[in-house]
Image (tube, rainbow, N blue to C red; front, side, top):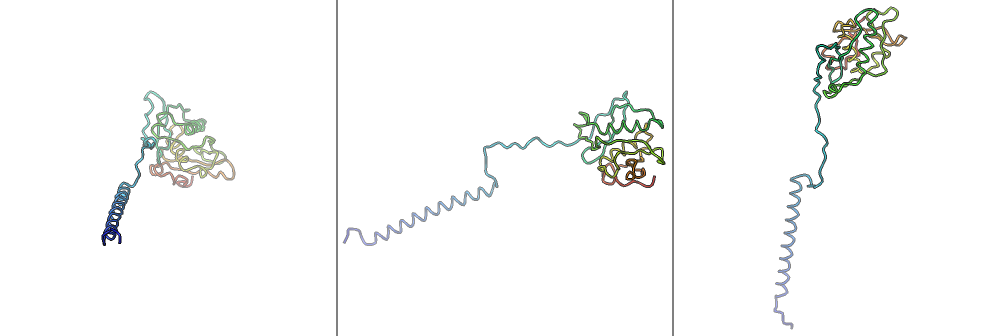
Length: 216
């Protein structure tokens, strides 16, 4: 017989099991605490700085008007999702039968030019294509008619509203503030000039611009 009292092996085994059980319990508790902490915050902390970029800016659509002692004309530009007017210091030919086309060309050139610094800062842009041209009536066209080098239906709705409202509100062009007669090129596809209206609803929702208001 050895010198170990009976039952000592059993007590040692029970003590080992208790120590092992305590160790497993502590590990499980630590894992649960870590999991709960991760679920609570949802993200892992990081020491790397994150560059979110500049804060978004909001268009004011408020450009400074031209000086009172300067001859200016209204030009309609896109700001956000609306068409708004700005005053630009431009000199136009005086109203007359022979000068209407010159006035229309000058106004179209303004629509095709880049916005000024203040206009750009206020959020104004233009969608009128730089290649677009305008000419006077041909054949049996009514005298107030203007013909574009592209059919109105081929222009974007925004570009068309810009042209309609700029022409319709030009006194030197003989505009009545409401409608303008526009047609396409002088060919089989150009069609007859049709009246297009400049309304507040159209300036707010330009999608309806391609629909004439009625027969010429």
